[in-house]
Each structure stands twice: as structure tokens, then as C-alpha cells.
Amino acid sequence: MACNLDAYRAALANLLKDEDETAWTGEELDAALGLALTEVSQRAPLSLSGDVTLDTGGREVPLDSLTGLLWVEEIWWPYEGASYPPNVVPFEVRDGVAHLRTVVEPAPGDMVHVVYAGEQRIEGLDGATATTVPRGWLVLLVTGAAGYAALAKASAMTREYTWPTGAAKTMEHWGASMLERFRNRLKAIRPAGGQAWVSWG
Image (tube, rainbow, N blue to C red; front, top):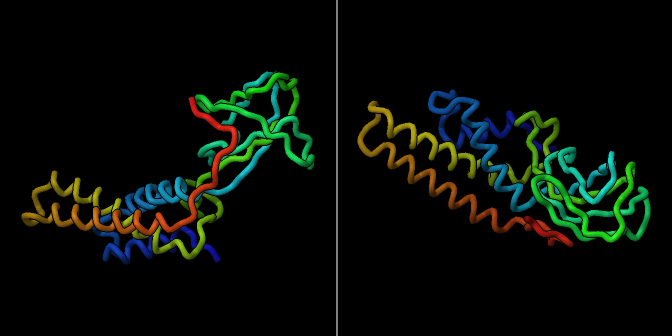
């Protein structure tokens, strides 16, 4: 079973030796987890797809209805649901809109199928209702989150005068080492697949 936000928070607080949340608040832990999750999503995104119905027709396909979109892999048009093989068309993406490079323009009411890379989710984080991250990645994510949390704390410590000399620098070094460990482990995760017919403007 996949882990929810409570499990990630507990593991992160344990790694930071801050189970009673005296050094980091729950919101700070969530922010650190979100940053680590963003890096994981870039390395190993979800493979998602969605349909966009064109109101006015034309070669411009708005992408704002696609949940968790990171980048577009393929666009199929004409598209009639279960049609096979898919009609993959060339395109480019600018400012959240895919511009089809086709001779014929789609008509109003046409459906366009978009295959895209999507963000990974943790149930309870940023409103997510389910966890997509494999359970085996918990340690990886918590390691990255600990690095982000430590660097943020080190930055705050430099503006306070209640810490022993060198404490902020020690925290900074530890956070940097955790992020380095996280990114080295992240390289072992299967990267996203190749992108077809895509260019970015």
C-alpha cells in the first residue's frame, strides 16, 4: 500500500530528529517534501493522457484542463476513442497551448487526445487525493526533503542570534550532503521516455 502524507511527515521528522516539531513546522516539512517530489517528477513522471474537446476548432489546443501536466509526449488527431493505430501529429507547445502542425485544421467539437508526462502525488500534499509514488521511494523522497528542510533552516539560523557559532554552517553542510545523496540515488530511477514530435517555443 502506498504511503500518505502522514507517513512521509513522520519519516522526515524522524530523520531530522524533530518528532515533536520544535525545529520545523508541519508546513515547513510539507514544503520540503513538495520540493523533493518535484525533482522526482521531473526524473520519473507519471505517464498520463487526457482528451481535449475544441470549442472553436483550429490548430491551437489548450492544455490547462490536463491535471499535473509537466510536458506533452504525443498528440493524436483525428481521434475517435478506440481508433488504432493512433494518428500522431507534429506539434509545438508555447505558453500552455499546443500548436498542431497539420495541413487540415480540426473542426469545432473535434476531440484531441494528449499523451503527457504528469506530476507524482502524495495523498494529502497540496490537495492530492491519492499517492502515485511507489512505497519503495519513501526513503529517497525523505532524504531529499531533509536536505531542503535543513538548507531552509540554515538560512533562517543566519538571521537569528540564539544559535552557537557555526551552527548554521553545520546545518547547511548537512543539508547539502543530504541533497547530494538524494540526487545520486535519483539517477538510478528510470528516466522519462523519449518525446515524440515535440518542440518547445
